Image 1: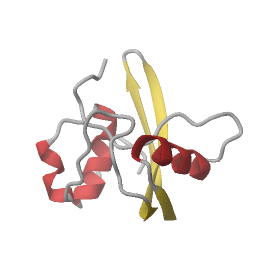
Image 2: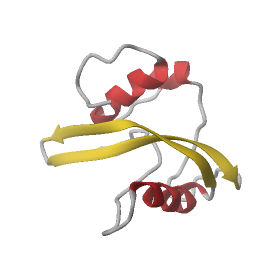
Image 3: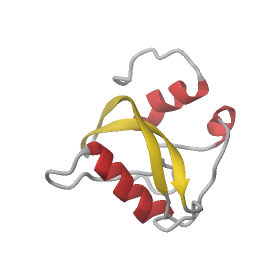
Length: 110
């Protein structure tokens, strides 16, 4: 449904898995990296026509490995000011504003 759009790494949390453990697992599976210095940034909720989603957003540092696209066809590291060059799902709008340093004006919980 949202094919062709860019996305941030992450994924579904398994039963009884903490958010932090989920992020560590997903980044190993999708990018082949280990992380450290996890810091929660907030929560996002969004309603699509096909259902609602909610997720937590974290800031972290690469602690081991070299990021590579294991769970996607392409990977890009870009500066926050360059994010507007890429198309993301609507649920990411509040996060994109936060990363660019824009003022949040609703549309999320961050």
